[in-house]
Image 1 (cartoon, helix red, strand yellow):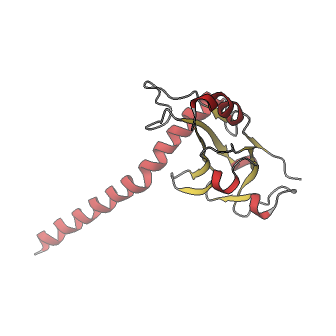
Image 2 (image 1 turned 90 degrees about the vertical axis):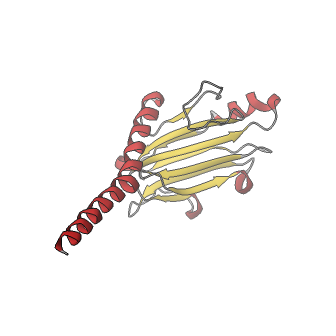
Image 3 (image 1 turned 180 degrees about the horizontal axis):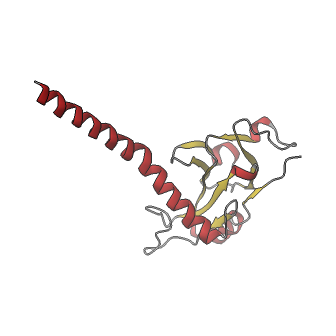
Length: 179
């Protein structure tokens, strides 16, 4: 009987260790690698990187769509809040998605909410005071110090691709001083 309890005990330990590695460690490790790669091409953290339009060879984004334009910012709140500004295009799908360091999505805004209007959001950590001049609707609390913000723009008509790309490239992500 002791033998079976030992086998069950070892199996339980192996199961719990596998669970921890698979569901908790691997996403964080993958996110760390992704953050380093994107920050490397962007020129650092808290800088918006506007990727080229995807084609058959492009793999900067997992399973990219050639009908979408992608921009990304690796945020690091270690030295203070980060501000995201730009304008959502009119009459085309657009989204701004915030992902914490463990890959969980914690905030999304899209064209149905603000299509065609300027946006401005400040990202802060819990218990970190936001800078002055932001309304409560513009303040986003991040559950992690680092993560990724992904902007997507759908090219709904090919003749609008240059306009949508130009507009997307005006979106920024930058640290802001607390005032």
